[in-house]
Length: 119
Image 1 (cartoon, rainbow, N blue to C red):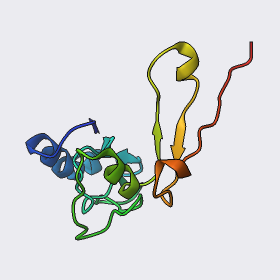
Image 2: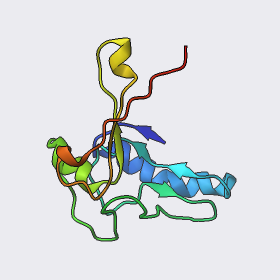
Image 3: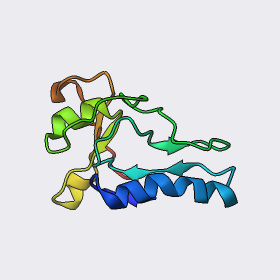
C-alpha cells in the first residue's frame, strides 16, 4: 500500500484502508509498507490471504509491541526482521547486497554475497 512512509496521517489511512481492500480482494496478500519507516511494531506488515487484519509475522512485530526509533538504522533493522540493504555507487557495487537475518545483532553478523551476472 505504501512505500517508505513515516508515521502520521497517511500511514494511519493506509492501516484503516485494509477493510476497504478486503471488501473486494479477500484472497490477495497485502503488504502495508515497504521499509516500514513508521516504526510501529504493534501494526503487522502484511495481511495474508483470508485475513481481515494486519498480521504480525516479521521481526519483533506483535500486538502491543513498543515502537522503534526509525532514525537509528541499526536499532530499526534489528527489530523489524530480515532486510536487504542495496549499496549505491557503480554498477558493480549494485550487484552486491547485504543480507541481515533477524538474529543478527551487529552488522558484523550480516552476509555480503556477490551476485555477479553471467556474461
